[in-house]
Amino acid sequence: YGWFCLLGVLTAQAGHAFGLLCAALGKDQNVAFGIFSAFIFPWMFYAGLMINYDDIPAYFEWLHWTSAFKYVFTSFAVSVFDGATLVCPEGVSCPYPSGAVVLEQFAMKPSHRTRSVIALVVHIVVCRILSWLFLVLAAKRINVFAVCKAALCRNRKATTPSEVTM
Image (cartoon, rainbow, N blue to C red; front, side, top):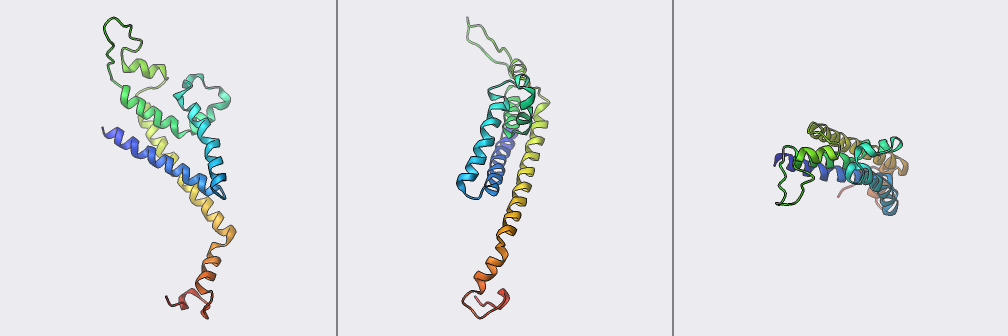
């Protein structure tokens, strides 16, 4: 239960961090959504949901390793199937008698859960740092500090923000 709570919080934080990065990169909503879409769809495709890790072409492996979806999917899959015994109805052939077989089908190992959680935290931190850097660059580009100072001092005889009485 603890892993699921941790993974749920990390998944939400990863989505928020990447959305913040897209918003910081784009000049308006349409550009930010375009950036978001350009990364999200390939990341989802190569995260292991649709293509097995072992079947990803070498020239697309960078999409696999940079995808937050990969780490979320791996962590949840290992949490669900590690040590699980799957029960099949009588008279039906059971292609997956245990969770270990499912993990093997997706080329995952139980040791991947901790590595995936660490990689997800790194992904969150990197996205947030990049977002901050792009926002600082955007603020310097439009000189937001001078705009705020002018807005405070406008239509008043004060020359500095400290002289303005609210």
